[in-house]
Image 1 (cartoon, rainbow, N blue to C red):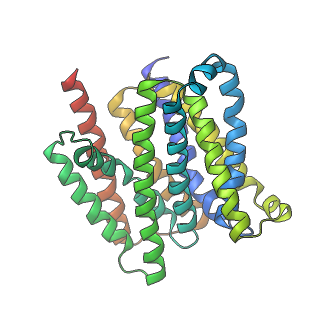
Image 2: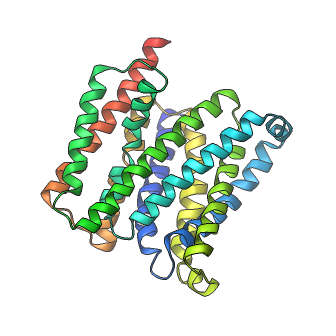
Image 3: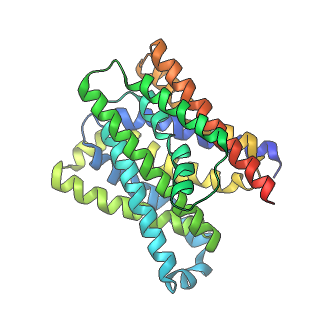
Length: 296
């Protein structure tokens, strides 16, 4: 596969992930956030299951006989459950632009965790990127009603959960490359925990779930299933720097989709906030690529 084809596949995946923010928002008209999540990840699990059986069946015995792999998979699933749960709940009140851009803060958070927990060296420019992200976050969340600011604060918690998720994925993949098995287990974990909260807090019904069928299928099958698969296929073949920029476009696609589809318009402060976070995230991505090349 050429770099151009790989980058195109990643762009398609990123477009799906970005536009899925709109479906996450509009898919809660008749159901609650945890009901949406558990049905979404039920379909995500079903999408990844045949890929796991087709390509990674030989890995099952190795996976099941290694407790470390199992623990990492469940830890990743719980982190993803936290990130998606807080994000989905926040979308009851937060704008799509806030959700999509504040969620990308996991990128600088990963760098900070690596610095203070794993004692990794941190390039000085990353601190500038962090300040840009903080300033952008302030611009996005200021001048809003208090309840919306509270909702936005959940997105920071979600970003932290996503950062833990990314770190665990990196640890797992370096030890045992089995992405579909890993993806299936973490989706099952999100499905089970979300279902418990849904039945405990929301009273889901099949009739109400059917009302939101399009949003559930789009976020479950296309975003979690197909988007995840496209990323796995393309990421190893894509050029690192363009791939980093393409992956960062998820928040841009989400914001544009919200503007076009559900008429969520941004004021100048929010636009500047989005821009500051986007630049900060790009800086962190590119610094990581540059550092990796130096260490080779």
